[in-house]
Length: 267
Image (cartoon, rainbow, N blue to C red; front, side, top):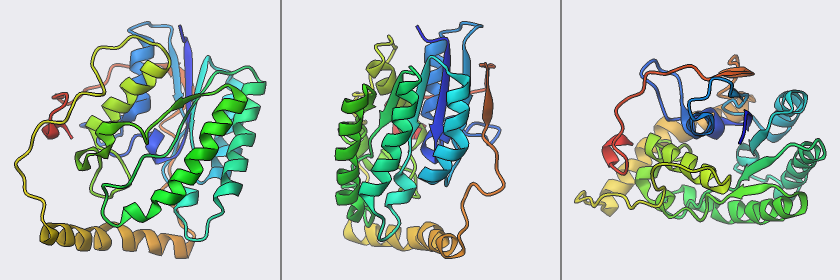
């Protein structure tokens, strides 16, 4: 049983784009915390993750806090923002990641890490597949060397469906976050209600070459070009923002939207 949990990382762990009615983000980590708490008042949870954070920022800003808090569990997902930058040295990113995992394990903290998802089904973004695959190979080895548990996002079949991805092709939909939380609980041997393997419902929506190209043009204008501008200016989506749960604290009830598990409408 886990009585305290700290999540560190970037936008994936912050919870983009699993939006709550008040505009805040829930995400798989909040969902996992709810599962781990099981309604217990004494359970405490902190989420230090912040969108746009690079590996070095996560290791210098978030990791020391996790080490100081020394919770019963730390989840770590980092490096995605580093390796998508053209010319990034994936081996070097992995080496820095390993140093962080080693420090957590040396402190006796149980760790769960996440590998990168398969981008094969995503137009344009599929070009990142080889870099993600190389990074994942490092992560499996790191998990093995340091006794960390792995959540294999690459191998999660439901994430291969386009409905698992938001329009920015970087972040997951609410339904995908729900499934990732269930998968993580399974890795931790925590009983859950629901099955992350449940197939997506059948859809009659046509997906043609023309609709794909229109989607690519819209995505380029709305998401890719702003990302390129931020890179050139050295800016980040997280500039000026603070973590949503900077300290260990009990979970408060949240107002949740109606969910339809397995239904594309919930995504």
